[in-house]
Amino acid sequence: MANKKASPGKFVNAMFGGAQRRREQYAANEDMGQKMTDWEERKMVNPYAGVKNPYENLENVHEDAQVNLQQAEFQKEQSQQSMANIMQGMQGAAGGSGVAGLAQVLANQGVKNAQQSAVSIGQQEQQNQLRSTSESGRLAQQRVEGEQKRDLMVREGDRMVEQYDMKKEEAMLDYSMQRKNASDQAIADAQATVDSFVSGAVNAGISAAIPTP
Amino acid sequence: MSDKKIKKYFENMPYGDDAKSSEIHGQQNQQVINQLITKLVQQYDALWNSGNKEGSGQINSLIKSIARQLDNLRELKKEFAIAYGGGVGGKNLFSNYTDLNWDRIFWGEGGRITFTDQYEIILTVLDPFGKEISKKIEDVTENWVIKGTEEADYMNYHQDLIKQGQTAVKHPDFDIDWAVDNLLINNDAWKIFVSDKIGGVYFLQEWMAANEEALMSGQIADDMLHPDSFDPNNDTRLHKHYADRLKMAFDPSYMTIKDGNTSSSNVGGRTTMAAPAKEQPKEQVQGPLSAADNRVPDIKK
Image 1 (cartoon, chains in turn purple, green):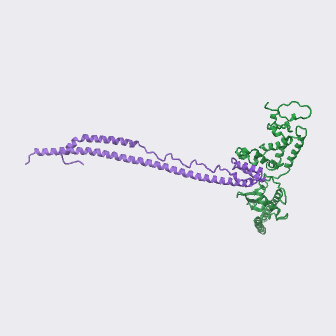
Image 2: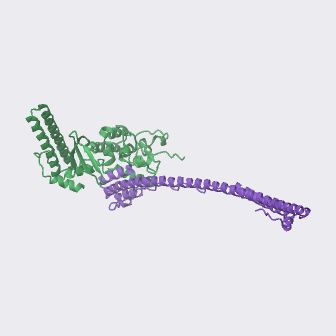
Image 3: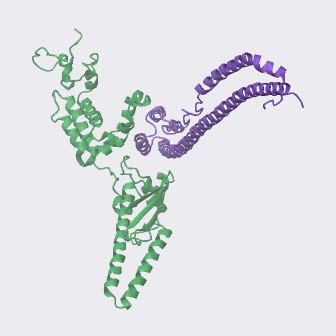
């Protein structure tokens, strides 16, 4: 606020403090400018950008399930035992209709427990198929849900970036207005002090020159 | 139903030749059939009484059609019983190739008879895996393979070749490969040769034993394990086995000579049966057969 009353002390301050104020103002402006540049250059990055759906490439562990042929316990005759050993060892081919057909014929040939083996293989095939189908469904649901979550996170990140940019612009506008006001005010104050002293001095001179009746 | 149970069932079957075709599949099925026929007869009566001869004629045809289907089914049951060795000490004529899981259940009164909208009979059983399997009457015998004279025919060749092998002839008087090919292919007899005991030997078990390592290491693909994969129209494994057996009947050292084993080459076999690729020009031998005829030249020299 302008000082309306003339004062020699304030005048002196107004006359001789200018350089110091300008230095301070300059330094403040420098500092402020640097910080502002840094701030302007700092961009917020969407923290969720590139988030991957963790369920995207999950494999169905039941897809290649094998039939366990070890349930077939063949004993007794040597040839039957030999057939049993082979059947037990046929893990690579187990699970298909070929080995089931083979087991069926062996069962018809009376190979001990081959029928049980054929039934067991058939049941395991069915169970494997059921598990595989069920697991496929579960994984598909997980993939969809995971994709939805990932999409929501990325959108949330975009929203955060947008909000940050808007706040930054608001704050920068605020600062620039405050700065402008402050510098305007300082100059106006100094001018008012000088004006007030000059007008006080003039008034005093006039009063002294005109004799009192 | 197990083999024992179905045999016991046929031994004690409470139906004779005069049994109705609707009663031989169990009480529950008989009720289903009777209910349907009763309903149709009522409809027939109503249409006849109302003077609708055309409608009543159609119903009459339907009833006769159902009766015919049931008669066919009865004949199939008889055929199955005979082929399965019904009665005490009967011989099962079904080839091991035939999957009789459905038949054992249905013909032992464990199945269910239903009708389609067109009044066609559907026969359903619950298989050992808990799955329902339905068949129409015309599908029942689709996979039946009944043994005939295949084993006897093959063994006749075998005996004949053994006899010929005892003589001085150097070649059998027929082409073994051609004979085996005909035996396997005629009437799809290969299904029997794959699955049944021929001359005391199960081909499938022999093949499995010979290929044990490959089977256990999974080198043989699943589709090559199925009995159908041995169809001689597409595959030579079956032919080779049976042809080799006949060749060995004529020449006991055929296989070892073929495999390049010279140590047993003069046991009594004939070099003429050996693989042509391993034969080398022989010295001319004068006079009757000598041991030199049976000797395979040492190809390492």
